Length: 456
Image (cartoon, rainbow, N blue to C red; front, top):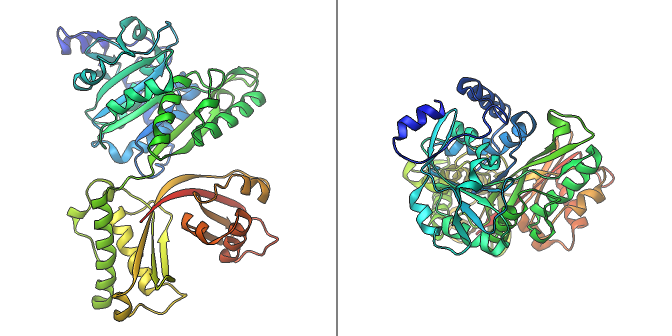
């Protein structure tokens, strides 16, 4: 659908037509659909649906493959996400604060996207928010995300904000008003370093990625990311909310479609909640775990959870471990780091296996069942570590926070974050994990992944 068709479709409504179609991305709808779908098809979904994303905004040949890693994370939420709050930096005009567009629709070659007037009303009276059509008229940092969203989501509304000179506290305040529930996605638009040679850009971007991952917003300025203002606002908020950042993809234009003497850096990041489950969901998972063990005692197989127990976060595909203890001592622990099952099913299966199929212990008896303590760990996706030595690996571990999976050949083992409670330091943590995997002390892991967990 062209912008003219969108205008006729929306009648007298105010419309912001595409400004960079034919420049940053194709202006032909069929060609645009094929290009976006091809980029998305080449990326595996990383696991649970994130609450927020950071994604780049350059021309599709350059940043599109990196942005696709962010949008692939939305596959399981095609119908769930009904609202996208999109913040991007101002490239064309100077402004203080954040600017609304003052229109009813944005359009792309794929059709119109309606502005969510309900959430506009929540923030329009904030002192740092203004209506400024000029800030949006030729701005590409928001527009280039819309075709990806149109192909990934079904029937969403948009709240677009161009961000100018504003402290992170003011941006975080706006995001607080717009945060919403699981039907709302927060999307921050930003590229990374600009116009350095390949080696310099790679070094700068590697530092920036670590600052983002560690929520070090104070270290991120315009030389690190053109969208430093909205990034800093998001990090300010998620630091308060105990949330984690997952690095999905980091490359630059020298890797994707350009020369290496003058490159632009790109990164895609997903933000997950460290407290994704509410009290009632935690209680329900405990009931499922206990019922699955009871079913194992009676019928010899795990519980098959009722479909009505799979609402909200419990229906997301998550990794989970169940740990059993008697009188404070380990009595069984089994689970999976793979994001292959809905969470309620993963907990039911892990509880059954921890009780009856942990090879270190005999099957749980009925008398022990009455006294056993159950601890559930729900995994939050992390990332694969890049390292050339064990010391490099150890420097990237966050004691008390990271779970770790290592592999070498056919050997593989994982330690949950809770294992830090029983070890004095990272060296001992890794040494014990290598022993669990059957690796000798002198042999370094070939690959390693970190993750975090919500345990209760």
